[in-house]
Amino acid sequence: MTTYVALLRGIMPTNPNMKSEKLKKVFESLGFKNVRTVIASGNVVFETSSKDELALESKIEKTFPKMLGFKSTTIIRSQEEIEKLIKKNPFKGIEDKKPNYLVVTFFKDRKNEVATVINLDEGKTPAFMAAIEKKHGKEITTRTWKTVARILKAMEINSK
Image 1 (tube, helix red, strand yellow):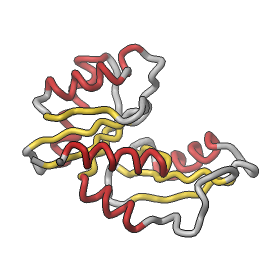
Image 2 (tube, rainbow, N blue to C red):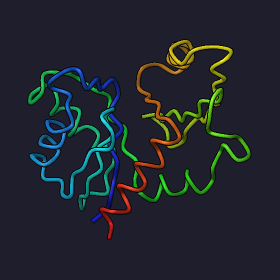
Image 3 (cartoon, rainbow, N blue to C red):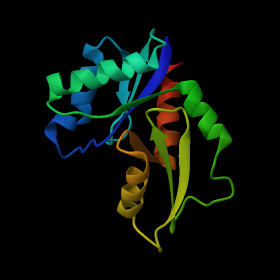
């Protein structure tokens, strides 16, 4: 079994169909094992014997409209990929505290990420999000560096 995280775009916990409990049930209905959510922003850790990440993304994306009534871009990363990102630490030497806001943007169509330090004294996150979306389209999703670390911890629990 391989442990993956599904990074879901545009999940708002205020929408009743996007709550963690419902997301978890959808993933379990797809046959995934050891499903757990990581904070309420669309991070779902799960295990499967499938190695076809594109097929997994497609399967999840096709299920959401049917079961929950909304669409969401799904970006899959394996535990190994998240471990490599954390080990690489693109933020070496940068403190993860105000005014710094450390974020990682994941791309659906390629296996790399963009690490960005946002100085909150100079601008707001929505301006950054609008700029990166304008340049790269909507098949991306961004997570804070702290969230990426939390995701890895959840993945490590699954793989024990």
